[in-house]
Image 1 (cartoon, protein in one colour):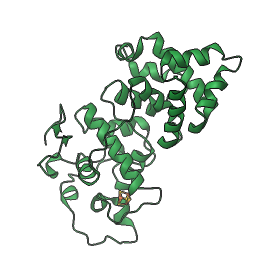
Image 2 (spheres, rainbow, N blue to C red; image 1 turned 45 degrees about the vertical axis):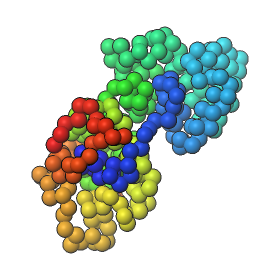
Image 3 (cartoon, rainbow, N blue to C red; image 1 turned 180 degrees about the vertical axis):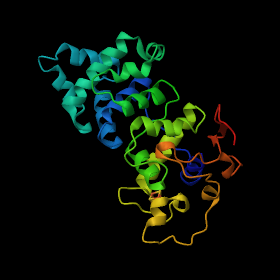
Image 4 (tube, rainbow, N blue to C red; image 1 turned 90 degrees about the vertical axis):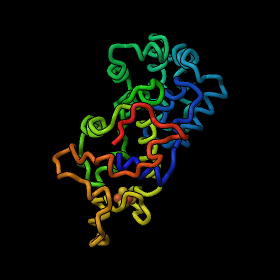
Length: 269
Ligand code: SF4
C-alpha cells in the first residue's frame, strides 16, 4: 500500500475507466490491446456514431456477414485501434458470448467468469481481468506492462515474472476491493506515463527514494537516507514474493479516501 499511497498523494484520484456502460468497458478492453487509449476512443466514437455500442448490434454486423464482408465492415469502423481485422473477430466472439450469457449480470454469475472469458478467442489474462475489474465489479488486480516495469525497477518483482505471479504479489498484499484495485491500476498507468517511462524520468519521481533502479543509477542516489518505505522493509524475499510494505509506513490522514469517501473493505494498517 505504500506505493499506492505515494502515487495517490502525488497524482490524485484518476477516476478510470471512461465508458457509459459495462459493455462499452468490455469492448474497450479488447480494443485497447496493443494500442493507446486515444486510438481506442476514436474507434469507440466510430462505433457510437453508427449505433454499434451494443452487443446485439456488434453481433448483427459481424454475425450477418462474417463470410461476406461483415467482419470487414466492423473492422473498418474500428480501424483507428489497430489490428482491426483481428479485433473485429474478437469483438464478434465476445458479443456472442455476452448475449449468450445474458449480459454482464449473467457472466458474473458463471461458476468461473475469468476462465469463461479466457476461453474466448483473443482474450488473455490482462483483457479478462480488465473486464472483471472495471465492468463486472470483481476485485481482480490487472497486470499490465506498466505494472511490470515499475515493480521490476523498484526491485520488488523480477522483470520476467509471470502474469500469475505478479498478480499474486498484489493479491497477497491487498484486501480485495474493487475501488482500490481500479485506482491502484490507474495510478500505475499515470506513473508510467509521467515518470517511469521506457526511459525513466526519475527526477521528481514520488517513488525515487525506494527505487532500486534509481539507487543503482550511476550511484546518483548514494548516501540518500532511507525514507519510511525502506526503513520498514522487513527483509529480502525471493522471487515474486517481494516485500509486504507495511501500511503503517503511510501517512494516516485521508490516505484511503477517494472522492471524499473511504474505500469499502480497506484493511487499515
Ligand atoms: S525513480 Fe525512476 S525508475 Fe524508479 S520508479 Fe521512479 S521513474 Fe521509475
